[in-house]
Length: 258
Image (cartoon, rainbow, N blue to C red; front, side):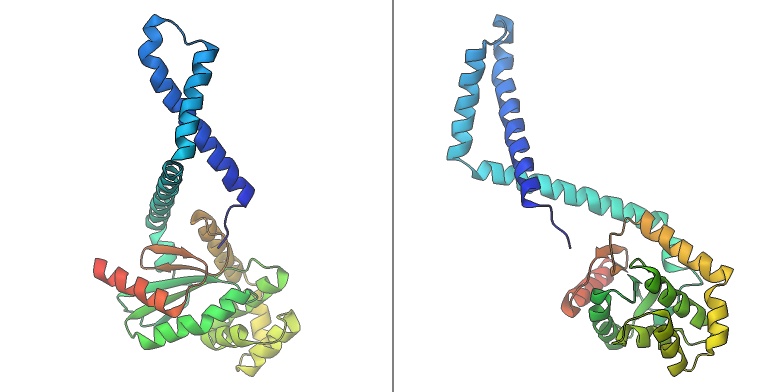
């Protein structure tokens, strides 16, 4: 998860304080408008009174900042929900997206990942434990290679492995691999899980594989994802890795809403 730079936050605080000063000064000035515009000295005096009050009661500023953050978070959550609703079919029911766990499960977890993403690798056993321990979770896999050409090759190999019924075997092997994922090593790993490498290489460059990748890229853009891993648990969009207990808690919350 990324956070705004400290200097950016300071600028926001200064802007907020200036806005508060201006708004309060305006509220004082309005009743006197009938008597004519306030002089520069009057305005300066009002601003000084307000400034002194805010300095003596800084909690007011912190409360305003907290409210601003809450408002922004709610707006982002609403935008996320709308994006999910608008793309429901391609998120949850794309027939080209591999489905694991219980295909008839009452809660669906959708994961966008990259095989060269370190966080994806660390989260992989967590998600596996979650799904293995809860027999009513449906898991949808979305290849989203964003970390360079080798990531794209790995994703192409995994997508092509579906043609030979070996997607899950190759997916697990790539996630657990301790070697650098370049094309020769990807193909060696594919051979170790029983894939016909010549056929795999051909399917990796097929129009169907291209279409699946393009659809996943477009979907990630529509959902405004900012990195891997990203999850949808039920209708809740989660950016970044989660620990096991957090994911279990979210699954429980989704079930409670049903």
